[in-house]
Amino acid sequence: MAQGIKEEKVLKILDNKNFEDHIQNGLKLVMFGSDMCHYCVKEQPVLEELAKNDINIGKIDVYKAPELTQKYGVTSFPTFILFKFGDVVTRFTGFREKSELLDIVLKYI
Image (cartoon, rainbow, N blue to C red; front, top):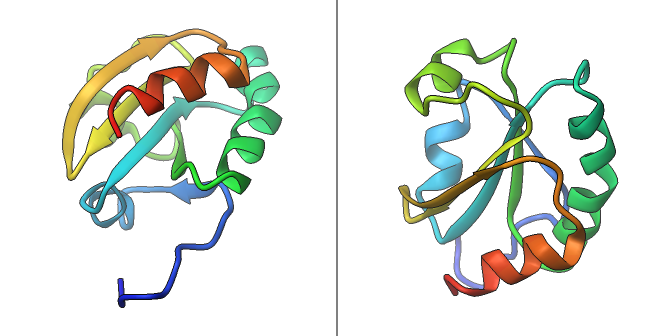
């Protein structure tokens, strides 16, 4: 990304084509889930709010990206994986409140 240009402050929808590029720069929280998962749907507004506050967040539909789901060993939803420059720094599952997600991300800044 060019210097001085910020990423758009939105929840980024990820797939097999854009995932690797997305996680390579900086700290990125990615939620693996599905629109058929109650807790994943419930998490959506929380993630959107965090994205507006300069937290880089991506979302993967596990049924549209089964290769990534398998690669990262995702078996329950939602699963969150925090990447720092492409490396996994932590992972956790289950619905989280905004303050919990923020605390986890801030530990790795």
